[in-house]
Length: 314
Image 1: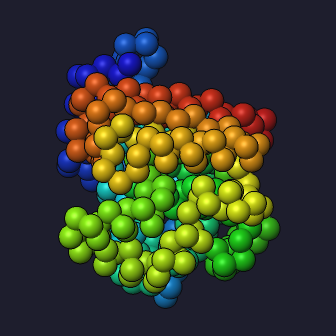
Image 2: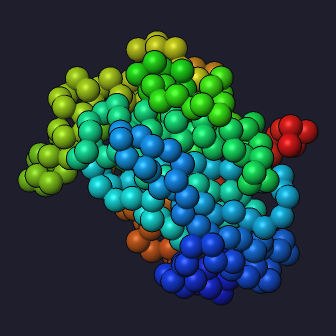
């Protein structure tokens, strides 16, 4: 488990990050494994929707080989940016995992599937440039939280969907968007279920976010990962980790288990991690709680297991 002192040091450093700053990594985890020094900087990864889009790169020092993750922020599909969940990115980098947290077109700018188009491009961009960061194209996965967790699964399942693969990548026109792994943290796994709950509870800001992004009920059904599998649609199923609290306000344990069952029935591997008693966004809201520390440590282990398979390609 991560040393609590080291964890606090990382999060405190994240509060005052400067572009290109190198953070020391001399502390030892309780496992005895050293942490890595790493650089943090903002870069432009593409011009999408007529606007330069930024990504925040968290790059461990050294030649690797490192796994790499494209990080997809939450925000009910209509808000937040690449800085959301920054403390987790810091921990990934300190553990020797490259993280690229991207800005993309939210639903408030352009509705679905624009964000998936940008995410698909981001995956291909990271794979094409992975060697520059000490990784490889075969070691790139995705990690998203809340609405980003939903979109990470969609992007993983539909790498070749012509609706998603619309942005050309001139430096690597033939690069595919297939992922080595995918992680969904407290993902909104069944959008229409949360839409109904938000309506019942009078949370009209969330209702509006669903309607702005998806348009209607049919759009939410079309973009529900478990329903894609249950309908028998063709899907790519990389190794997946889905984690959430047992008291998540928007996705019940039974619904998460339903997705895991469908993923397995489709021939995929899914690790379902349930944090007892935790609510939605628990890792972001309470990063020092034991359940949050445990979830992040389990994610690191999962990423290293499935993101370090193709070292020979470096």
